[in-house]
Image (cartoon, rainbow, N blue to C red; front, top):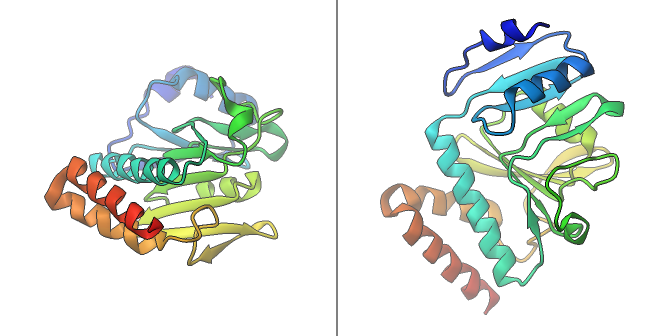
Length: 214
């Protein structure tokens, strides 16, 4: 796969493309060419590379959800490291993924000071967040990499998936925040942000968290 062919690809906001029969060397070369400072996101699974370009509403939702997770972690006084959309990839599994947001909670201490993920030595994120991910490529990669908890915001609803025996199972409760009705509450506050804006919504969310803590 030549560099010229890759540069000719144009992915419009809200669209995705798939490249077939991409080997690991080509995948690494594409990541290098795309660079770190880009808007598109990638998913790689068994030779299939997907490149997607998020919409503005996607970006706003991922930031708000990430901010609400940070508020939860702060109010619960849980140490953590946020790695945003850092690429998680493993050659032996032929998988790679870039979440919209990811957090190290149990394994935060191992990630202090790290600038890049190297899954040959680093642990996987404890919590990953994706907005509008419906592709099998992305889900296959998360499952194979064994990210313990995945939040997906699709069609206006937050869905929590927990890895059990190597497969994702839908869950009512987040293992990281078992005392909170996470899915319906975050969905409600995202809707609220459409009329009240980011700042007021996050203030209200923090007040809600404190009220739940009593």
